[in-house]
Image (cartoon, rainbow, N blue to C red):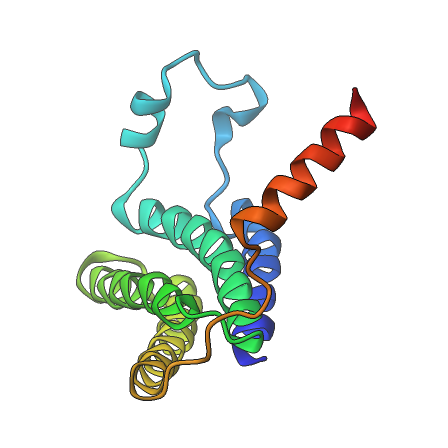
Length: 167
């Protein structure tokens, strides 16, 4: 339940933060004239490093939140690989957010940009710790094999029934 709630909150929160991202940036006086035509790589290279980290943080938190939501559903229904999925998602994002805070401390503007990355670092680190504990628990006492797996005969019967119905 924790991974489901945290995953949904991270996904929706990242979407909301991402939509207000331009309010945190300094105004561009040339915005009224329209930006000159350029490639995505050229536009990306013009942003400072801390803004690149912010964009990747929001995208990673949104996608990672959806992944944690799926892992939480799997953990709730005792699926075997769910705890490992939670580790695969949360550990890299925790490390990324620690690096993001380090970049801000070394070269970024601290007053506006430090609060959200610190919070995200704490959240992703806590989720990584919970995922590691879940994985250790699943390795020590694995959940039973699923009772809902179809045998080959049942799958063939379903396919033939489907073919008769549709054609």
